[in-house]
Amino acid sequence: MRKDTWDPAQYEKFLHQRSLPFFDLLGLVRKRPGMRVVDLGCGTGEWTARLHRDLGAAETVGIDTSEAMLAKSGQFAAPGLRFEREDLAEWRAEGPLDLIFSNAVLQFVPGQPALFERWRGYLAPGGQVAFHIPANQDYATHRVAVELATETPYRDLLGGYVLPDNRLDILEYAHLLERLGFHEQQVRIQVYGHRLPGREEVVEWVRGSFLNEYKARLTGADFERFFETYRERLLAVLPDERPFFFTFKRLLIWAALPEAESA
Image (tube, rainbow, N blue to C red):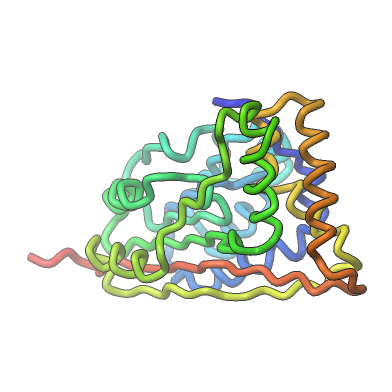
């Protein structure tokens, strides 16, 4: 696994705002007795514990790649709930599952059609998937980072890396789920509007999320220079308004298999 640059304290500066799509996604899940659940990209485990408790699940496993984030998961331990460190793309299930849940991580994962096909094979009849994928890549926060990463000296320091957009088109998700046998589904884009004290908070927001992908590929000093330049450029294109209305598009996906396979 590559360098772990996630900082729980930085991420949780906007914990309430980040929690909104989680609860909307959880609201789409159909509760069943004795569910076996996996939460892919569980972070610190706080929301995984809420998922486990609200569903009354018999067993829930939280999976994340970040040792720093998982270090906080012990405080959320509960009967039937455990956490494991593993690369999401390499994860394999043990036994049939009733729900595969993933909140704000699939944007970092390539090859989603193949992953969805594999994950579908882990589900029991009537099994469900519920995914939340940030979809704000056309916002200035992402555009400025991509522009900076392609300029000297960062193009060379990053080895040509720019944060990829691994999302499928929204209609592709719907067609993919249909092909995989999910005959009930909801696939939608939702815009969340966040009133932040000022535009400076937008910089702090992304420092706790996707900028970690650049931080992981740069030395500490190089990343700080990258970040300061990024900060200057982003603030220059965001209106100086107080409060600052930060709009964030998110993709919410829920789907369910039939209770019994067709003969």
